Length: 375
Length: 90
Image 1 (cartoon, chains in turn cyan, blue):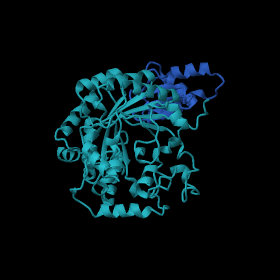
Image 2 (spheres, chains in turn purple, orange):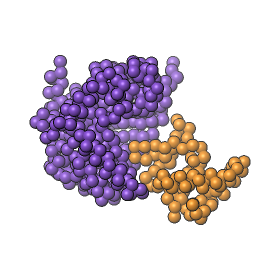
Image 3 (tube, chains in turn orange, cyan):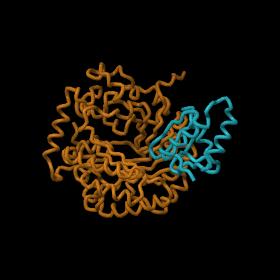
Image 4 (cartoon, one colour):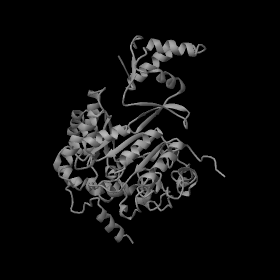
């Protein structure tokens, strides 16, 4: 017996191929418990996942990680994605990329490479990523990506230590010939939440960066597209996270765990694994994917809120991380009685300046320590 | 104003594709997708980098004689598509 589709199909498939990464960015969106993940899916597992998701209607495919380039079968996965009709995106730090590999991936049918940068200078890059050579290499790879004919998308994760370089960031992107630039403030999940006091920009920093970004847009109406993402802590209403729980986005973690967003591993739900179930059953029938669909799960103030159809109560992971209950309103909302937690975090961030000794860099051993110290 | 003898060409950073599950044409680009309505999908699927705007109007007028004002619809769509950088004209 097959049940009728519970909802619209997943249009976006995020394939997190691995949690391995040569860098150690302290704002990484991977879960802090990454060292507890099981063994990585193999090539055939990924082929099966892609085929099943494509059959349901998924059209966009992101290869991410960790650093997806550490997977030796990446070119094979890209070729299969192309054969199935996906638009494929490689989301990478650029470390591990070579001119030859840029060409081989293009040959295999990759549509787009997004390179993330830590900053516009090698000192801050090294401080944040832990690699001295990464910055120069990223520049070279950005040029290789451009000359291979890919659309050029650059991503800068913004935080207190680089947001004041916004002019240089925009200038560098312009010089590299970017088509799209994501100026995305860190979202405070995973490692970024752990390091929130060290990363959160001040209100003044944020306002200045937004003003400079807007001025550049006005001066270059036909120029590269700049997407500026604020940290949602500075908003009064929550973001419509993932456009609603399990509505269009499906992430598959390196060990095959299926998640409605890449942070959801932190939630106390029993997420299904693609080794045990097919994508259609996971998407339509699993308890975890149905947990926060629709509006029935909501508590007040969301339940009776006229804005619930715009923001869906915000982010479940943020609600859980800050209130201990994933079905509460996202505390970013000023209607939430837990908003004081957000305000306290902003107050703490606004009177905190230097990089403290407590910054926790993302690494396998740091993750193991965190797991060991969790009761 | 769109020049009727100009040749529209799909921006190489976009891919036009029929999506069975959504029952429509979509434009795919880095991490994004635009669902096209029926007429937009039809018009864009005629854009091949060879035909002029005039030729596309003639082709679709012949295929859909019952649709009134089709030339205007196509010109309006071309203006939008140009503003969105989906197509460029030569």
